[in-house]
Image 1 (cartoon, rainbow, N blue to C red):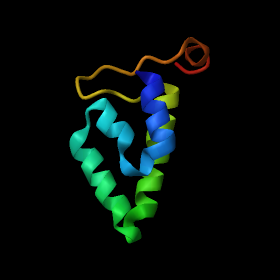
Image 2: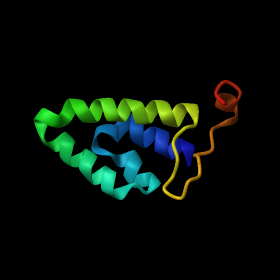
Image 3: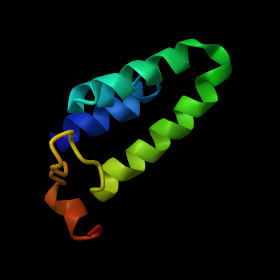
Length: 79
């Protein structure tokens, strides 16, 4: 769901929780490993912010090509 992906990204985004949740296991593992390696942590924060923006505006796809369904109050502002 959109809300689950949004909350996981907002709260545990640098660890790739939202990517695990939406089915992107490979990139989620990579994001978690980058976060654990302290010197790469800023990369994952930027990655998380990009994913968060894509989730909010409705551009985040699941691995099967479907967009996450936005809540009604957001869909009138984005798309």
